Image 1 (cartoon, rainbow, N blue to C red):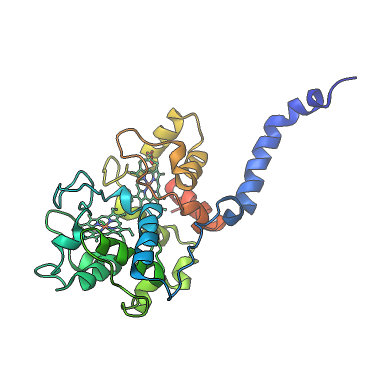
Image 2: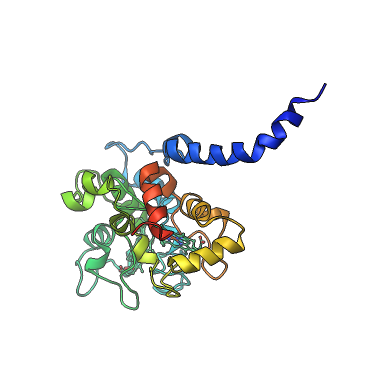
Length: 272
Ligand code: HEC
Ligand code: HEC
C-alpha cells in the first residue's frame, strides 16, 4: 500500500500557493501576533512603582532602538537619539527655548517631540502616543517617572500630568482604517525612516520598487512575499548596512489584512 505522503507530495506546491493566499486573504493579525501585554497600571501606584513599569515600557516599545543609556557619556551617546542616562540631572530646569521644568520638559518630549528638538539632532522621534510606541496616558506617566529616576527622584502622579491633546492621543478612526497606501505610509511613520526615491537612504533603505525587487530577487522571493515578510516580521531579514532592530516589529498586529495588501500593492508598483 502506498503511503498517504506519496499521494500528497505531487499536490504540495499547489497547496502551499493556495494556502498562502488563503492565509493572506483571511489573515486576522491578532490571532498570529499578540499585541504587547497591557501592564496593569493603577492610580494607587507610587511614583517608584510607576518608574519600574516605565523601565519595562521603554524597552518594550522601541525607545532603545534610538536611545542609549551610557552613564557619563553626556547628551551624545552612540545612538540615533540622545543618551538618556542622567537626563533628569541634565534637564532639571528643562531647556533654554523649551519648557522650563523637568516634568514639563519630559511630557513635551513624549507628546510633541518636534516642539523642542535637542541641539545636534533632527526631528525623527515619533510621538510616544502614536506608532510605534503607542503609550496610553497611564503609560506616559510611568515612562516620565522612569526618566525622572535617571539622575533624579520620580514624583509624577496619575491625574496630575496633562493628558495628551485629543488629536495627538489617537489617530482619527477614519485615518486608522484607511486603505489608502499613501496615507498609511505617512500615518504609520514609514516615511520618517524610508524614502520612495531610488537609492535615497533615510534611516532605512529606499522603498522604491526597482530596488526592492532586486533585494527580493536576491532572497529568491517574489516581491510581494518579501514585502509581507519585511513589514510583518522585519527580523526575518535585516539589510546589512542598516541597524538591526530599528524597524518597528508591531506592524503585523496593527494592520488589517486589507491594509497590508494595499501597502504591498502600492510598494510593488502594481497599483498607483
Ligand atoms: C526613531 C528614533 C527615536 C525613537 C524611536 C524615540 N526617540 Fe526619543 N529622541 C530621538 C531624537 C533624535 C531626539 C532628539 C531630537 C528631539 O528632541 O526630538 C529624542 C529626544 C528624546 C528626549 C529628550 C532627551 C534630551 O536629552 O533632552 C527624550 C526624554 C526622549 N527622546 C524619550 C524617548 C522615549 C521615552 C521614547 C519611547 C517611547 C523615544 N524617545 C523614542 C529619537 C527617538
Ligand atoms: C524607525 C524607522 C523605521 C520605520 C518607522 C519603518 N521602517 Fe522599514 N526599515 C527600517 C530599517 C532600519 C530597515 C533595514 C533593516 C531591516 O531590514 O530591518 C527597514 C527595512 C524595511 C524593508 C526592507 C527593505 C530592504 O531593502 O531590505 C521594507 C519593505 C520596509 N522597511 C517597509 C516599511 C514600511 C512599509 C513601514 C511602515 C509601515 C516601515 N518600513 C517603517 C526602518 C524603519
